[in-house]
Length: 380
Image 1 (cartoon, rainbow, N blue to C red):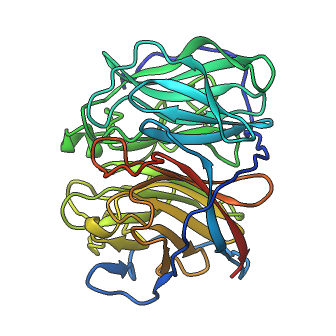
Image 2 (spheres, rainbow, N blue to C red; image 1 turned 180 degrees about the horizontal axis):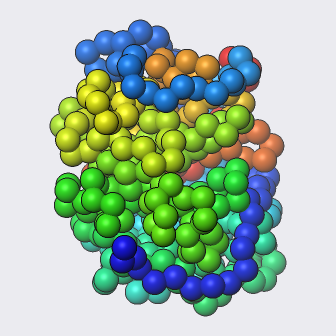
């Protein structure tokens, strides 16, 4: 097989987290529960992989969301490095440092980023050494680069780029773009089909896949396809990654006109696109564990907290909670209150942060947009 080039540096482990406080408030909204399948939200009953044993637990938002940061420009991802939160801006290609008072400053700009449509500076990840990884669009395709970060909080600076993988299929839409270190210490990346639907079924292409690699961009020996970065395939535009405590891996995926998906990811598995979309009960393809009409979802970033998956939704304009003990059900929060929601993560002190995306050309920006909001959690 032919794959993009890689480079070699030291391997890395899981990223670090931080504490950051926040200020002003915004109005809360009651949850909307969807516990049984309906015309717009249904659950798989046939070919989804078996769940591992997960403790019967879960958490839910409580209280009033508060502004953590405001006036961001098409933000896409938020991660934690030591005591500092870092945010990517898709169109400006800037990486911002958040101070405890909610102000931001740019620590640097990722070089040679081409922001067009859904492309630009997308996902971020941090390894155990505090190095920053960024998924971005260049002239010859999407790429993942690693950066040293120097200086102290309040004066951080972005070092030179080391490209660990490049020439990933790109387009003005369906770029995937989420990166995250898994519990195995390896780096995972979601890649869209870049508008070339057939690539999702082509194991010679990286389009329409979830990739798994070392921190240097090299192929792990235990990947499901020898000599390949491909971990799973048959994806249209996956954009969320999360792992439950038992190691079960989940991914969110944008459908076309019919169904958006929540999938349990197992190595070497075919999730069906473009042959099937949503729950199809078709031999050879793995069904999602839950699906939603695109107008109610467009699921992007995702995080797992104490037995609950939280999913950021763009068109649906909700923060969706899915219990891992029964991922065929969900509860919606903040329906339309904050517009499009791109990413969600957990802060070290235990509050949930979610990132709006109303300034990306598809939303209706409010006076404080775009924002990071924080909300407390309670046991569900």
